[in-house]
Amino acid sequence: MCCTFSRKLGLKPEAAGFGVVVYGHSHVPSQKVTEGVLYFNPGSAGPRRFQLPVTVGRLVVEGGSVRGEIIAIDG
Image (cartoon, rainbow, N blue to C red; front, side, top):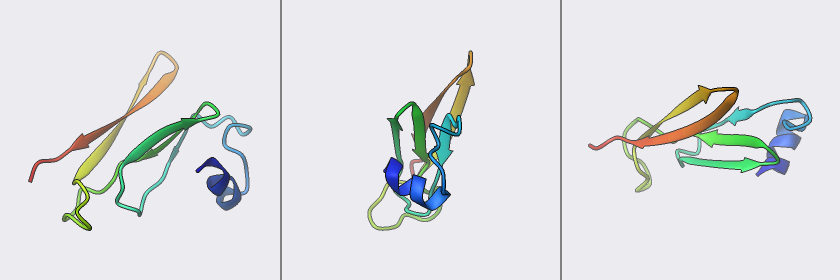
């Protein structure tokens, strides 16, 4: 994942000092830490597609650190 983002962004997020990369369009909620960077996709809160869950995301920043939460929306 990180290599794909590096090519598309034209930089390495960890070298640029990024703590988080937020991305989407896939409708697939996910989060993964690679080389100290949180890659976060909140999924999709719109109509259900492709049997995927309906979700939203929240980034929580506390004490100089960040974590992601993916929240399923019943419906």
